[in-house]
Image (cartoon, rainbow over all chains, first blue to last red; front, side, top):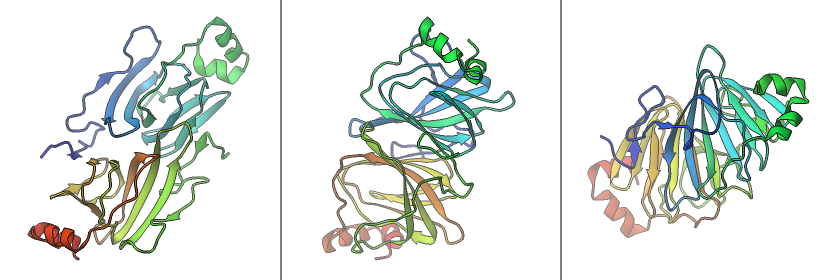
Length: 149
Length: 149
């Protein structure tokens, strides 16, 4: 039975009545092989709860914004750039992305990385790095290798 | 390395720098073998993201409140009463508890039930069932068996 109260997981990180969406609304932001599913969105809830899946070898957009991200890995493992640090992420690890902090998630080459991501329902639009931001990010060798741009 | 950005999971549903808390602030509400961990709580986030674990044979408080719950099972399986329906929950299933709806979660006898539960940061206090509420709930045989009070 499917209803709004109980939505079953199919064993492969899809849920009843949850649509698999394109990751970005616009085609402007560079990313690779990412899907988005909105698990909970409710006028009575101050946050939107999403599931993102990055395919093997893929990555999310390098971006920053005023709103914070609260993240839990629930499938596979991967790496995250958050500010000046690269974090090796295992299943069920927690990541907090503070306000206005550059961040990007990458899946390993051999398996997907799936994570829950909580954001405020009302939030600002992401900012993409400009030439001077990229220059600053690339000043760190590990970051430069991670972002590959 | 532990920091506020990345908190590692220990493989057994405990996280770095996340305290395992008593489930209820007061001893008044009836429950059995439940722990609570606050995974994300932030002045910049409109919600609080928690992990609850119900030990084998245990159950949460039968209660209702104005604020909604957004739930995902992440450990084991169990059952949930939400309003007039009992739901069999498997790993990664989603449950939404609407406003002012009686609800209770139960673990099976042989393993724990762990779930993520999202609530608004600002929310009302739970209400416990009064005699007339229990009478109404017990009018349904399946519900009566589930709540066992």
